[in-house]
Image (cartoon, rainbow, N blue to C red; front, side, top):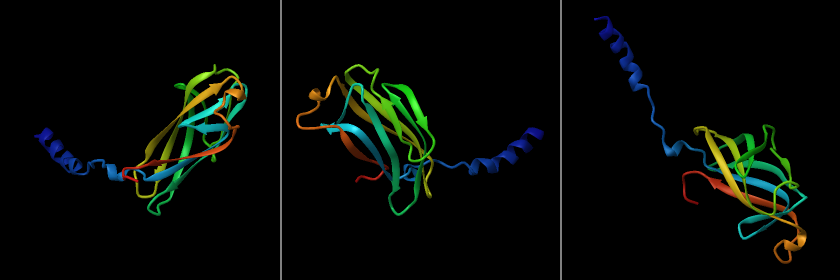
Length: 156
């Protein structure tokens, strides 16, 4: 009898469980500002010995809803390089040790938007490290570049 009473007390809790929906995910544009890079053919090029600079990571909420990013982590070829919990979340990554060739820079972040569920965002960039500036794509030199990525459930 006692067990039945406990089960009856737990019954209302079963109705309070909510299901997640894709509509609850943030709908944002994320801008990553780089410096000292060349962007060509969906790849960032950086010269070995230089510094790949991420000037900042910013978010803009769509549908007139405010959004923020917190706690940005940077991974190089799957290994944690550094993290920055303070806006604008910029870092300098020295290119002394990566060998020339193809690499992947991943940026992980927590995203919060008004009236939406918390989410985790991941951006990945193909990076080619070249031995010297003569190996950069023809007619280019390192400078600033801003990448804008859409994260959300709606088609843009």
